[in-house]
Length: 136
Image (cartoon, rainbow, N blue to C red; front, side):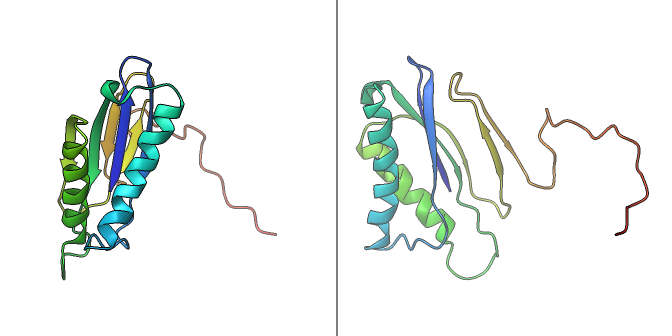
């Protein structure tokens, strides 16, 4: 689960990754909130007023498709926190069963989300001819 904050006025931002191993239950929910607060505070120390921040949240997949859907629970905690702090969520890409690759441009706020099996749109292609492997 990624929470991405962007200061649209200053062109700065940051991202925090909240792992599925964090239990979003009564005690774990505070760990999720602490991660987001750490990011908010870092941006405020850099000069971003809270009023200028907007959020994007990505992830929350149910990767293994069995047992508790911890990803959705963590996403719910993230959404609740951002709503309670009046930080607008401008983009949500939540759920599903696949991990994601995230590329975020802090200056513009542009977000690219792809599946790991699919190369990012601007990925350089290897144009060198294939050679026999060297054996030592």
